Length: 306
Image: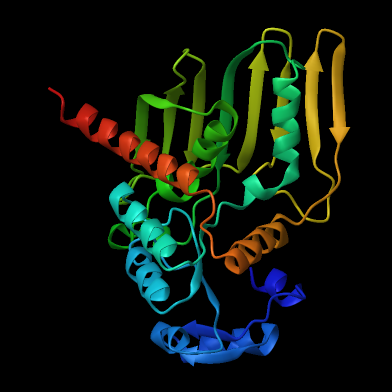
């Protein structure tokens, strides 16, 4: 986020706040802005209009609220909170105060996915039959916050959120039909899993994710006359042209599309929202956390069943 912010003409990095003063100073020496020791120091500054909040999910509700009450627009990491009610309250607070609140799901800001959606809706693969999406990354260091239960860690909220959002993007209304969450040896949080979602007319979405796997990132939409696949859809390199793989009865086409820096695109969307004093994609954000909560509830119910 910092390289993209530092490169933008309509964003000024004013302050970098950290619990560790040395880390704040080191980052400020590269990206600009003044280092600040502690988060409150940034929220009290009058020259700060907006904050990017990448804190662990367990800390986000408190600091998103503090930032909004301090009159700051907020770009928060995903999910904004781990609870539908808390997320709804924060969006309501932002609207009441005329402030922007945006969840940082960057890949949906990339125009590639809108083009895929147009191809599907235009009948490029016939009638849609299913969606398959995966996102898996290798294990993190043992002390990584994603493994810490007290900080809201776990593969579902950190990694699984991507295929869930992809399914929402293409399929719309969804409900949970099945879940599997696996807790790797020595861990107190889920480290991988699988989800089966369904639309009201029974189009399934098969989703897999994990943070103890070989790297894999893709989604595929399958129809009765073909399929569309995109590889590395959640983190496309900004210096490479993304490719849509379109397979049908007459063979496979590889549709190369213009490269886009989705980080810069996300920041631009946030800047526009801040200038307008509006929340961003509130309905999608709330529906997303509702689905994630339903996945967790279904998993708990399945484990407690006799």
